[in-house]
Amino acid sequence: VSMKAAEGLTIYYTVDGTEPTTASTAYTAPFALDKTTTVKAVASDGTNLSEVVTVEFKKMQVLTCADAAAACTTTESADKYVVRGYVTALVDGGYSTTYKNATLWMADAADGGNVIQAFRLTPVATADQQVKVGDYIEAIGTLKKYNSTPEITSGTYTIIPAPAPAA
Image 1: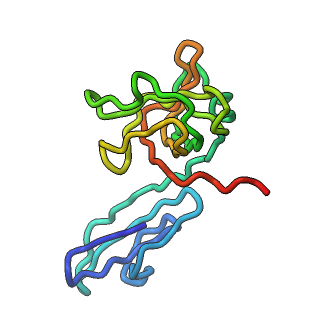
Image 2: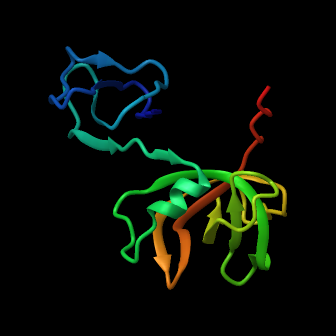
């Protein structure tokens, strides 16, 4: 979690649901969260407090391609999930310059076939980050089954380093 305030102001925050005051933890550096957490923060000039800013950070479940495909139903999931896997096939060239997104198939192994479709996900880095077959990606989005096709959709993707092979 990274926070920023105007120069000369100090940010105070809580992660336990209570309202922050100048007695709360002072923000000095970005910090990590390991579970779903509500962060509340205020800025202070030493005398006055800003309005409280409240942000809920929701921990997303990381799924394999096979588990994500199995979890798909005809109703789009309310929660977003992280699905990591290898690009096994590109749909219509993979990247759409018209829509600035990608449609592809993913699997848990580079030669694992077409397990779940990543449907029109937007690249996180830049619009020109085009995927290719064999890339290992992290897709974040909702799960649904469109007709009989399991999909992760309504989200983003990032090309990431592939995991080290098992010993």
